[in-house]
Length: 285
Length: 231
Image: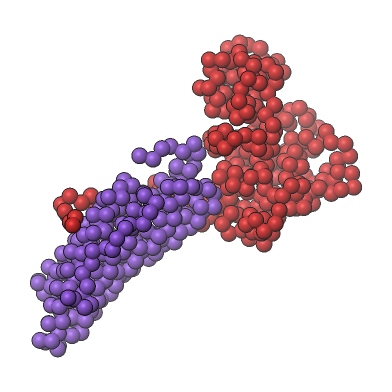
């Protein structure tokens, strides 16, 4: 039988120092409760013709955090996201009441130039949509539109954006290849690089991983966690697990209403509303 | 060596959980030591400190349980990661019980009428050292994901059982010879039993480590001494 040689046992465990670990811990509540607000909506109602798609939605999206919108199909989460850069302006018969404030600026004010707003609020869609141009030109596109043509500035910005999108190492030797030659996951990160090249304040993502395989999805999720140090990120996802993995805050929407908005730890472990609980536990949806 | 996960937050959550478990183990070990020191030195002030400090282990266990719940909800862990998270919750419960035994020893110390004599004290000291050494070994096995090292602590509990049996018999004899000692000796019997049970909890942790690493339960009965009906 083996016996314990006490002189050979490991050192005392209580010399272990975990003060830093304890400091990082956010169990039981968020340290983010007082995070500054980036986007605020006040009593937002949105109608497509006679159909009301958003009902009195008031919410505060924290700055430099990832906020996820979840809810069943047709609940209004994509419609809500599109309010933040006025994409719904392009929809016929769409009417909006209430306020959307970006850093306290009313983005539906008549004086607001929509093109400038969309520079401040970038967007990434479900299906990767690189332009049929080189990888370099895809990322440089927004800068060129703004009139930047200096080669050095463009090169530096493209590299910074591709690094920021965790794609640089994979494409640095083929920047002149067509963006469409990349894999789906790489294309989506290329599109994110194109968006962040303009240094927006907010990055909106509408189902950014639904066309990607699990590994490509994980890479985009990791990227979002890295980018939140620099950008406010709002993501719409059908995938509840994705919201749980990547977001700091989660909003559950149902039938055009914001049912619950909470710290992600809390929403997925101790939701306050019965409808939220029923949805995240698979009772409906 | 565990490979790096694509999601940094996943690795951070798992690392934090491990750190929390090791911290709680350290807390339990420290309180067991201090309780023994209080007993051997008849130090009621230190004993009271140990009684009060039990709250720390309680809070740590609650924290780990909450963290386990959050990690389960957020990370969708699979395979050995999943087992590690589940094992963490159960290991925390055993560690909290160890701290409870320290508190129990401290409370009983406070009602003893006099300092324990040298011979009995040496037996207690031996048992306490053995529990501490087993705990350190099993937590090292946890840290290193070494099922075999955990196994050593698991099988060495028998030594603790043997000394407990001897101490039990000694205390019974003491009571038989000197009925005036019954009050103190009864408290000491419970202290001894607590140390013996603490050893059992450590072996339970070893079983959790084995399951966490290998994915199968430890095979075969654990070597034991039957102190209730010795052959």
